Image (cartoon, rainbow, N blue to C red):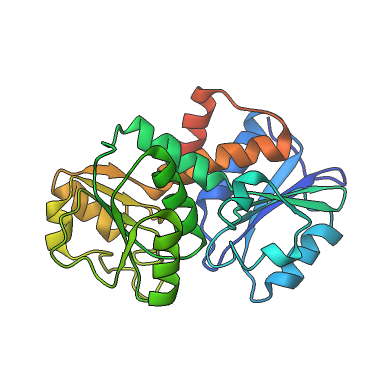
Length: 272
């Protein structure tokens, strides 16, 4: 059913440094399929404080938060759910009559994917990145039972801090380290980014791994995903993370959980 926007329509949105279409298409597909009076729109900003204040002032029901705002938005919120408190990283804001409560559904999505792909818990991983998304992914990996891994980050202070917080090691580069799973949580490979056509890891590193995991959402896959697929690796994509975490956001915003069949249709539509 097609629904016209009216005075009672509830707005949900996203804030990202480089907005994409996946979330917009995913949420709006479900709103229409379930005949909900909601609309979803992606935005970017250079003033995160003003943007969050706008969410509160305008009564925007929900707000997804992506790089680079997952940590920067925290001072302007009223309460963090335990999912966000544990890792001090936010990807979802819910507005209840002006009270802004924050969650992290990325953690939930990553945990589910590690289970569904049956990644061996004795696998040694190398994760590139140390920002807010990195915290969510590392926390999910640690809580899933992975004992050995490396945080690969150019910023030694942030990289070492993240590694030590979760019981892993920091390295500036992978080098000759034996790794079974490579994980990218940086903008490398993101459409529109400076390194959109770059591999997040050297080919020799990817060749040694059995699982390739990239949280970046890119139509057709990032260069890392495409190369990993060509080499016959087990692949976990950013689109999968985006769909699973978006379902949890959808439930928080609307109070309704779509059927698995409808979620699959929405994800296929979002991938376009």
